[in-house]
Amino acid sequence: METNRLSQRMNQALNAQVTLEAFSAQVYLMLSSWADDAKLDGISAFLIKHSQEERVHMAKIMEYIQERGGKVTIEAIPKPSPEPTNTKECFEMVLQQEIENSEAIYRLVDLSMSERDWATFNFLQWLVAEQREEEKLALTLLDKVNLAGGKDASHASIYELNKDIGETGQEFPTADEENPLL
Ligand code: OFO
Image (cartoon, rainbow, N blue to C red):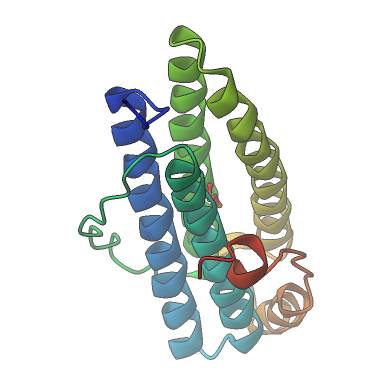
């Protein structure tokens, strides 16, 4: 008897999203490491916490595939693009990454609708809502960077920006809470 409740195509597409979330976590790690090297400790701390959030997304999708009787296959994670050269570029990369994630999730929603796979459609609504929040956060941070002077920001405004972003809250559960398999 077939016990995988996901179509082969959906299983593969969700698996690709697992890899994309892992890639996203790598992008945030790369940005955090750039910020640390640039002595932006607040920005670096924010980005490393966000990297963990991407790992929570990855773990939730893995758990969903397994719950439906599917198979998770761990693939290689591509190398992130080169480091930014200033804070504005850093937060443009953050926004770009989030938009690409949203678009990949929308393609999954389209697939779930075309297959009338309502369980997956329902699961994906959590990620759609999550992406809406993440795009909002990324846009707000980019606005702050631009207000501080963008790529021509003074040392004084970068100092304030670093402090402010370091204090930006990120409410998200740990991977352990989200995925008891971990
Ligand atoms: Fe920041 O996004 Fe995951 O999905």
